[in-house]
Length: 372
Image (cartoon, rainbow, N blue to C red; front, top):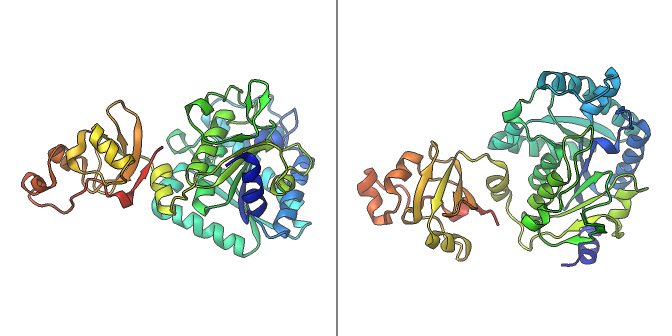
């Protein structure tokens, strides 16, 4: 599907979008929040919303806004200082959007998240329900990573990945990543379309992170890959292009568009494959790889060569081939200890090894998402 086709058949018909705005796009050179940039973006969101498109905004900039408010010359380096500056800046960020949007009769809602909110299935569903309710009330959800409380093990590290998870959570039609770059370049050539995000595509991420932001082209490409593998479109464009959001949704040829996979994943498969943190690994033989990837089969104990980690039944685990490449993720029917006892065995031998046989499959295909 070429870029023009995606723009005309997906972007122009989108009814639900997620927009991620980078720190550098709404702050000035000194690092202070730029009310004019916020106002321009807010005006576009208001216009798009008025046209019937549901918008969820993922807005970076809390640390940058805090730096400006506190007159800090550079981004802090220690976690406590980053958290403190984010706490100061988050209020400034929300106030700027509120003041810009209330004039357009659009209310805003702050939603601060950590990695654990996505990885826990119940909290994940609660977030989705909250976002749905906010949209029904006519409020614009503005999401950000909760930098003021998140520690390293609970951080995504940048809002590009959060935006991808939110896109998949809502099954939004398009993820729009707005920054201060025109799109993805191959050398000096701006790419109109990227058919598939793979290792070759990720090698194009040569740009450095911005001075104030935490992401870069690598995280944007990763985010686009997460969304397109789930069956939705993504686009990277320059936030400073006048009316960029409206132009994108009108199908204009700006930015780099990413082609969605032909098959859309269910919400459950998206969560299993891309959101839940893995508790361990299962290494399988070539026969199992073929059964999973080519024939759509469940994983049986007979194909398991090795089990790594300590986990209980129902945990999310990564399935690797013998070279170490991840081929799938799934919810295991057995604990790590049980899998160690039955690996390599036929299904008819499970009961003798464990004392009973609650399942034939180590991971059922309905609880599995392929990684490629």
